[in-house]
Image (cartoon, rainbow, N blue to C red; front, side):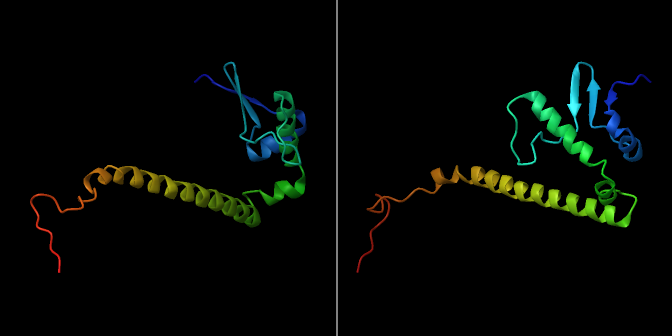
Length: 134
């Protein structure tokens, strides 16, 4: 079977890539897919140019070469599995929260046509109805 992609791994990350079976970027045809990390700097700002964003992504990925960080996210250790589990659980909670609001929006849109059905009755009760007063 022909390989459809090429992993892009900087030389400084080769050991990390082999250990975790991770590549920070992949070339598929004429496209380069980056690992999904936003190219923000350490202050959370996104550079205006693409090159600056890519440099920030690789700086973030190279931080994982630090043994302390690599050990923290290591799925082989119990602490690493717990950290990954906590991160995945947090992301699942965020997605569930968003889904709750989607459901509320759909329910609201489904109920809006009922506003036409449930209109206010006329003040006099209409010609068919007698007005009861004491």
